[in-house]
Amino acid sequence: MKNRKKNLLFTLFALGILAAGGNGRFPEKETASIANAAETGFIIDDNGILAKYTGTDTSIVIPDGVTGIGDRAFYNKNNLTSVIIPDSVTTIGSKALWGCKSLTEIIIPETVVSIGAGTFKNCQSLKEITIPGNIKTIESAMFYGCKNLKKIVLPDSITDIEASAFSGCKNLVDVVLPKKLVNIADGAFSGCKSLTEIILPENVVSVGGAAFLGCKKLAVVTIPEKTETLENNIFSGCTALKKIEVKKGNKKYKSEDGVLFKQVKSGMELMIYPAAKKDKTYKIPAKTSSIGYNAFEGCKKLTGLVISGNLKKAEYRNGSFFNFAGLKNIKIYMKKDQKINMSFIIDLDSDAGPAIPEITIKNKGIARVSMPSDWEDKNSGDIDYIKPYTLKGSVKAKKKGKAEIIFKREVVSHKKINDKEFELENIILKTTVEIIVK
Image (cartoon, rainbow, N blue to C red):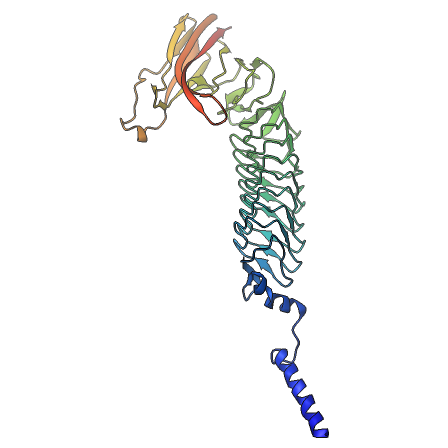
């Protein structure tokens, strides 16, 4: 009887060792969860990374013990509506939830320290999300095309928002940018049509090109003291923009009457005139030496400019001065012997030939007007290889009085028929430049 008891105890002990994997230790609960995960569609590698989800559940809880979510783990899982991530996860790979169009809820723990590019791209049902406090970068295209995203909570740990991070989030109404934010990359908030105001935090140094392109309700922008770089077209298509403010102390940018200026070698460059300003005529400050490309884009009210002082160059492109088709009249006040250079950028219009203006000069004795002598197309006959080129002209004041230069150009325009269709029409762009010599 005693021998039978001893044999039974030995058998139970041996089975216990086998269950423990031969090392005398029993498996922890987390390891058990990962071991059984494959049965419910979670494919987890030897490093604890969730490589792929093959299940069909619409609401899922990722198993405890998973250390990271791999690239494309839930790629295009269109039926997925809810994801809860455990505290054991520290990283989320790129495109992890790309195209999960039905996703409405995701809980990300504070243990997560990095989220890859394009992670939530085209998650079209996602309405709000909170980013954990250890994230430093909102990677490129992270929320691209999340058209129903209305609210996002960004922690103060974030220093960089990469290219197209929130592009196409057309229902994003309000976003408070983190205090430590330094850089906003190209197109970061492009197409965020519901944004009404942006206050750039005090540490922002650079804002990339087209960062707020097409933010049609954006009315007010505040630029901080430390900002050193604002790339071109950052507010292109912001048709409701009324004013751009710049904090005192900024050494490179300043605002006058809501208009943005940039310090350049020759003086001040008029960089952006807000599209929704109501003035029909704008008197450019005397210290302005140049006018930036697309400075007056989208200005529906403005038809005239008054220029005086230090302007060194006027640019004519696409049938209009400063690439602004709405400009009808320009008054330039000059002193005797003062000279203004004119650059004519000639584009090829496939429907109407090279974009060369018809020029009429009145009262030539008041100012010496030198227009390019050779307007002919300098490019090859192959339309696929034709590039814009620049011809140079100038105006030099000779004596007191008034002179006129009339520029007229027929261009092909796209006339909107409905939301999806356009038709081509020929229109005449005419700008009268009045030279007033004092």
